[in-house]
Image 1 (spheres, helix red, strand yellow):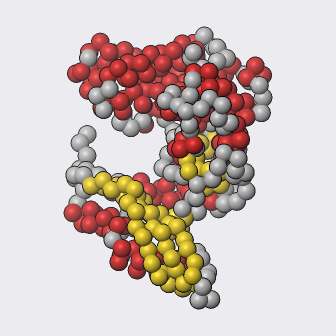
Image 2 (image 1 turned 60 degrees about the vertical axis):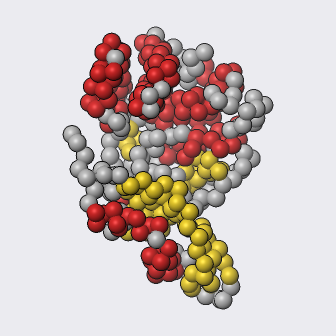
Image 3 (image 1 turned 45 degrees about the vertical axis):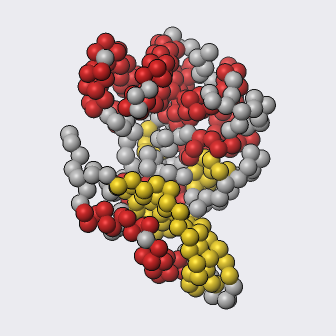
Length: 356
């Protein structure tokens, strides 16, 4: 189904997130609700991080470095972001973020970035910046790099989310591998057109992944999951920090907690190969899983490995599809082989998470 074009009015409204006068007015009006000492903005610096304007979609992410005058006539600073999307997906993300912030993730070791307010006209929301860098930004070409503290926090954050009671009065979406973007019904015809034999192979793998998920879900109680757990969404001040903040809550849903573990493991594998040796990547993945379960791999039940590998396969497939549309055929075929290997581990009920 072809996407409809974004109206001129919607484009003009979302673009206002990068308009200094507009943003200054709205922040002067709203910030005192969240910062009691706020009086007025003295200076503001805008930094666009994402500003896509297309026929069928508009996406803006803008940072604002603010110098303001406090109610006690003192000069203070504040760093705020805004994100808007023409598909209105940011409204649900804001609501999920607010729920988590109000249910224990506003302090301590495991945090989320602080939500501020939603603006209907711009289809987006303002939130407090999370100071620090992504876990991925800390990756270095150094096999001796000690990531264990950050990995333990990252595993702990996921564990905390997975054990948060599900509020069934909240309209949580249900996670499904079939809802990947782009969806199989869109990318399979494109793959077939490009290479019919390879397209058929991918079609079978998509079917296998769906069937495995259906089988595993029969005996699972859904939990809250992040949905897109990877090193770029983990914000830390340093590798020896005592806390972290997560950003981007678009994909939070109810589903199998192993979705988050499998996604993170495969993303570490894919993102880390430019920085670390195979042995180092294997070590990172092993430590992360053991930190989550607080057990050695040998003590973890085989079913957990099957489910982690299912979502490693699914994540690798998603990445392969994106690379296909970027015309990186060699990488696509290499990743697809990994997908098949993960599925083989599931069939053989192997207690393994690494392929090499």
